[in-house]
Image 1 (cartoon, rainbow, N blue to C red):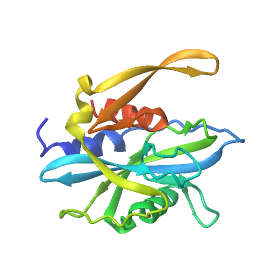
Image 2: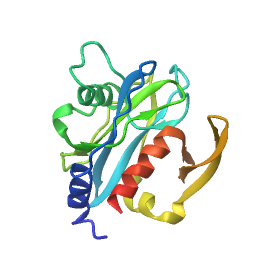
Image 3: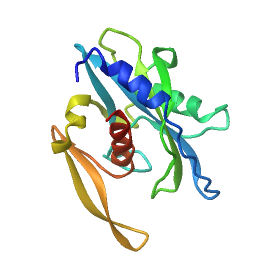
Length: 190
């Protein structure tokens, strides 16, 4: 897959997808942003490594995002606001191209993942929230698309054993809800 066609492929695959919405009255609404940026002509997916100070998922690799605030007019606003708060990406520098299926996490959030493209051509200088984010991790999309880089882990879910995707990259482990969202994103691109 040439890098020239990748942004168009992402746009088309995600824009044409109709996400499944989950109604879960006990789960708090939240949103994340699967942000794709260009690094020297190659698309990368932006992740954050969470600090040990945050309430949920300490030290884990995740997408920028979080819980919906009362001031947010919609979940897309939540994803963009949280991304700005966590890593300093201005909402006007993101083109939202679509969304993936809602997912309920073990921490009892109903997460709506949005997919966005960073519209600035130059290297983005992230402004990291020291409380929430230890570092930004950019992973080449080609690496994530390579099936050899996905592992399947056995996890306990509602009393039964299930196989779930996981990824490792440069000493970082992407697992749990983040890996499930990432897997859906990759499958749509395939």
